[in-house]
Image 1 (cartoon, helix red, strand yellow):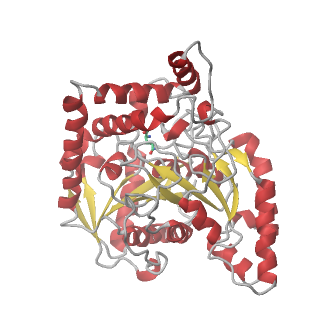
Image 2 (tube, rainbow, N blue to C red):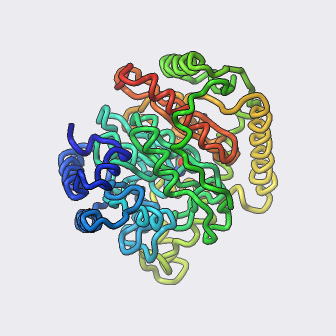
Image 3 (cartoon, helix red, strand yellow):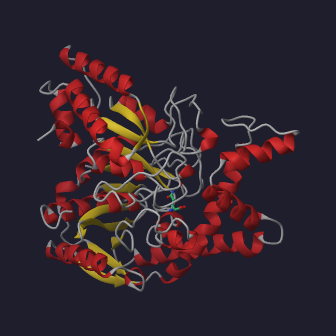
Length: 481
Ligand code: GLN
């Protein structure tokens, strides 16, 4: 086995006890990146020098018998909408093509304190708007399981990097499914934490009431380890929650005897691919066999989720993206007066999907439409949240497909935004309600990965990880893509 194939928990243990040099691991991953990047294009930028320097530092400290961090020497890829000081943060947009971050995001400070090796920044849909990574100014990322297919999005670069062995761990961001759906399409694990669990400081804002940074990995234990490192209260994020950070790995071996798993009727209805349904139900049967109790529940407002999300997210985006005006950040296109400069900068700097969202959002926030659309959407958001509260009275977590289909073909949906938006049907409600959700691989269909989504009560990531760990363990070796 090559070093790049191993898990973060195994690698970090071997590095910390001096059995393995962090530098050899970085060499192995960089070599793999050189082989795979021409096919996959998971990265926007790489920091080979910085990665090697950090690995050498870790090795030197281990050799001197000094204490090193929890993930010492483990190579991590970071979605390119999270700021790393001194490096470019492009959000896959022309408007930020040459923007250099003046500070570290809080999650990056935490990763640095854990002594990880930061490899580089991964590709995404521009400003995280999309479900396929095709909306990147730098061109699409390809799915390592089938290069004619998309890796999902918007954290498609992070998911593909993991699946292709170009990183051991990765960070993504999830506003409406952007960690879970690409994880499902690429056959890796991705967790969207409860809103407030992980600091958003240094994450370029898309829709601030929905955005969360979360861990992505090739297995559940690594996901839990990374979640622990990046979680915690942060005074720099006003929506950060002052809650304790549990040891997310401690519960993995507890089993799932007596846990009640709800199946929301509305998530298994029309539009769900037959094979995806079969794989998900097989996983559910397996969980029942392991001692879980399966109950049917209803989330009656599910049918409004996509409409609600695609009003609230663009509304917040139109406001957040007003700051890119050619004055303070990045790209500027000159014009004869200030107004023309704004128009030219934004006209040339943003891609089509971003402009579409800004227009949608500006429309729903404008006088006369505000009550009819935006305010109405906020009310429905509350109803969607109440559906979950009701469901969690009879079960401990919910099991659903992550996405209605497996990875689709490049170009298949990009011309039809509505079809693209519909692929988020099982993930957006989780963000609207602020809940934690995980996608864990549960087999394949025609060689393409299928993901099982587990949705939990607020701040109960532990139960999600515990159940996901059982799914992973009992499916080991079965129908892997
Ligand atoms: N696909 C959804 C969108 O386009 C979600 C994106 C995300 O979670 N960042 O808005």
